[in-house]
Amino acid sequence: MRLMTIAIALATLPGVAMAAPSWQNISAEAGRRIELDRSTMKREGNVVEALSRVTLDRELTDSRSGVPYKIIEATTRYDCTSRSARTIKRIYRQTDKDTIREEDIAGAELPVRSGTLDDRVLREVCRPPKESPAELAQKANEATSKLQQANEAMLKKELAKAETPAPMKTVETTSSAPIPSIRPNLKAAMENAATKEAPPPAPVAVPAPSIQKPAPTINVPTGTTQTVRNNAPSPRPASRPAAKPAAAQGGYMLELVRPEQARPQLPVAWGYEGAGGPENWARIDPRNTLCASGQRQSPIDIRDGIKVDLETIRFDYRPSTFRIVDNGHTVSVAVGDSTFSLTGKTYELEDIHFHRPAEMRVNGQRYDMSAHLVHRAHDGSLAVVALLLDRGTEHPEIQTLWNNLPLEKKAPVQPPKAIIDPAKLLPESRQYYTFMGSLTTPPCTEGVLWIVMKQPVQVSDEQIRIFNRLYRNNARPVQPAGDRLIKESR
Image 1 (cartoon, one colour):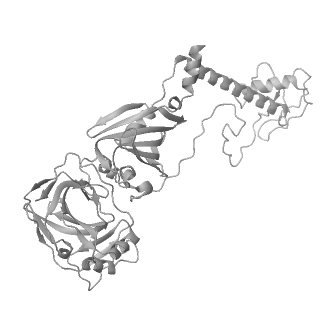
Image 2 (cartoon, rainbow, N blue to C red; image 1 turned 90 degrees about the horizontal axis):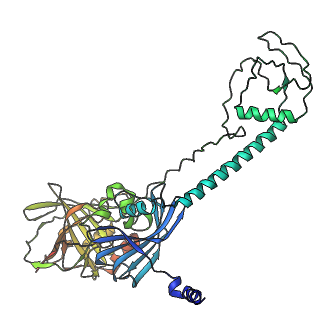
């Protein structure tokens, strides 16, 4: 009695009612560990709701709160049949007990790509649960009972049909002539049983078909007749109706019904929010695998660099006409012949585009905007010169671009007289940070040389507001720097 009292008291304690997650490690790799809480898994048919988390070796800075975190917990619904997933909640934590923020996600269900974090969790949660012999026996008994009930229902249905038969023909039978049948033996047996119980019908004459000798009409005494359907040959009809499935005929067998083919989903376009947001780039297109699995991704928070005497960049930027387009992700500008040289290699300027806020951070500080000048060398290698744009005075070159903004997305404009000088976009100081990274947009190609100018470039508040009308947020979140070497001018 005393033990029972103690047990009841423990059960009523709040700490006992709210059990802590029981994390089980399912994968460990460089820089992160993936764990699963099996105690909270909910299974509904082929859909499993599971709580998992990724624990990072190094802290990342939350883009919304600015607070560092190391743990990301996600509640996700996995469809084991279609291999798809939908994240419904995400929690950012510094430690197991310190929560930075929570967010409910109303995203679309997306396919799970092989080799991703979700793929590893899906394979774990979709494994069939282990059952004891007693549970298996119980399921077998339940299946047997259901089958027996189905058979009884089928028999009742067939007997009910036999009580109201179609018009019958009375034909003479002999011991040597077998009774023909167009139904399985089970069907014939049921009809025979029904005939014995029902009173015999009055004798009926059988009309002879036109293609064979007429059969005599015989009155058969009671007890010497059998009621069967007319099996006499008949003229072949002009067209034969399609046979109905077993289910349409009343059904006396189990039949598998094919499910309707799922409607194809429209492809999700990549973007910066919702189903096409950065966290889903690798899922929506297999070409974007590096966006999730890459080890040298950009942007990063530039810190802990080594100060050295870096080589001076030789810019050869020239004034030219330009073509400007709103491509649906940013404002992109193509210019004429402009290059820069570094470490014996020459890179040609291909594109200038803008992000709000700035994607790169410097010691945790984020700027209002950034301009990326994308270059390509003859060997195909990429280099990006990043300019940090800070709120201040109006910039003439930026204003020239804004004056010629297209009225429609994806409709390029090439002003015949307007000129832009990329050299005037650069800050006075040529000091810079440099490291290896990736493109900050899909497919997140790595092996990109990044050059981030240390001195910010000023743009006016009005110029920032103009871009904000087009793109309030088109910046990829900061990625782990890992063990990358960052160098900066001293």
